[in-house]
Length: 118
Image (cartoon, rainbow, N blue to C red; front, side, top):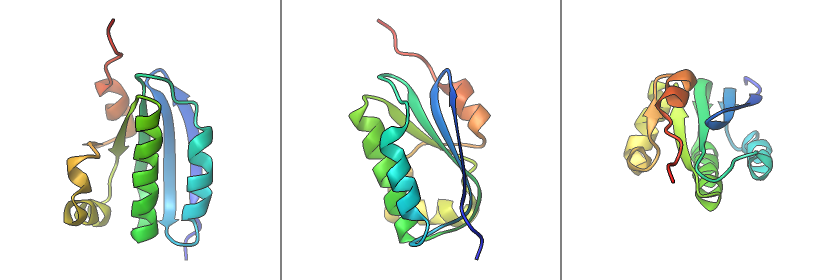
């Protein structure tokens, strides 16, 4: 078992959560508890960097849905970065690849963000 390591940072485009290790039944509650406290503002994006994940079960998928809901409630968007192949496959199977855009890296996601106009 690989413990989950969590690192958060804030960029001009919004908060970034970097996850490494196992996102599963045992570790998902920690992320779910963290989500409401993220400093995400209207029009920003939440980047969830999954590049360091070694495992993601259904509890982890539920966390990604919760993160999307938090972003939408803040009138913001969510993107995933560095999605491992095994997680990408799960996202395709359950159809979340249609609602969770992906980028190869967190830096690419940040570079692709466009501030709202108006």
